[in-house]
Image (cartoon, rainbow over all chains, first blue to last red; front, side):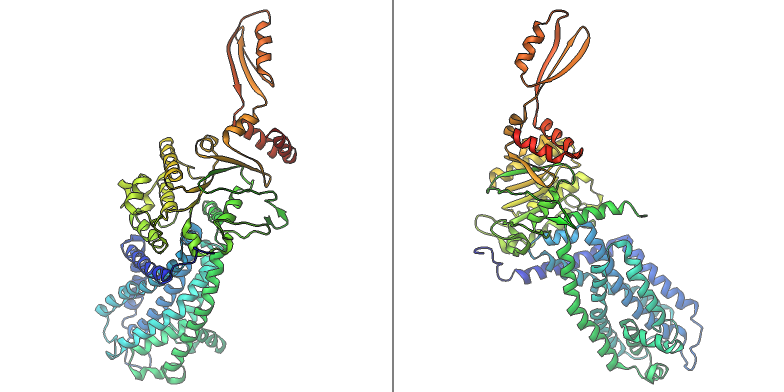
Length: 290
Length: 293
């Protein structure tokens, strides 16, 4: 139609607004006591566990348990946060009208999803800092070599690209916030149980090891261990190596699949958004038991 | 339009001219929201043709989006934002679509003033009352200086003062900005005040489409006559009030006092239609109403 074509630059403009939106929401989250409690509580659980077992030696090494378990826990926490965070946010914002509002605004969905990416990426920072700071104060021998910090950065970046789309896909698919427990929490908890966070994955049956190694959580933990621990510890891993190439390959594969599938699912979700859906969700919110 | 194998909208045909304020009335379940969602482009239709601002809303461009505004019933989004930050954010998306005669977006401060939220501009939205939140919804609906505005029960939950202020906003949009407005409401008084034209939707069909005055006038077949005699109240409905009252007064006996003659209003006509519709006589009701109109 004449006169109704989108002006040039309106999409990059919306991306910029979305980045600003995501940053605002991140700052709001840091200021919200609800989110502060979440960060503190998860950090307290993790650090508390490590503190209770601070004198437990790890078999076959001269390290104490916190040195080995901290990287794994960090990996799992990041994976958990990046799956459940966006899944919960999307399911919630489908129901409260945020997504519909974005749909009613020109290029609003572009801005909305850009904002989500920024918000959830940024939320890794308080999550990891809340665990790392007390851990470094309480425990010795955590970081074997300073080059590990560089490894942490790329493992986190790749882990982000691998797991964030999974969370968004779950959020796009779940019928409602109340179902996040079943379709998000539960599988992630099960994966955390078998991904070598609390005990070496080799202790499990062969087929469980295979399942664990299909998903990004195991590789995030492995990558984090490779960042924190001395190279000699690699002997305790599957294949006696950090398997850095495999880590990059599996996480990248998830990132590629996510980048291809998630936008289609998000578009489908957005297309289905309507006012009556939001109204129905509002009704349903007052009726928890059915 | 159909859900499963039930057609919910079967005879909905209308056009709205630029600058018109049109009100869609009808009982719950009549298809008002479905109709408006199809026009907003939020819902797929199973059949039929729709053109809004020259485009099919379901395949419309972002530029089309920029020319429309939407205010829905159930929004409770962005609880952690303040009106100022949220309006700045939402308004930003309209900036590339500004034209010389329609500068977009409306400046945040001007908008806060229009909807009466200046004092609450920096408060968290989560703390807002229902009416305050609706005013913010209205602000976001008009932030892009829309050429066409959809209002779905905009004053639900408003106190009388907020309602009057909102009516001022609508008049202002229609008169100064030449905004075309399609609104739904359950408040017939509001429909009469705001709308140039009223459409009544019942049983998935538009059964009436005219100005509020005409509808009330044409629906006024029956007139209600009330009076007292000897301490007793009487009510009677009649087609010819003048003749009835003449004969009533001519009757011997106690004098007639408190005489009151009331012509049926739009509300009476509407309620009658809805009542028949709900009693399962929708077809008959529609036919009867058509004959009247």
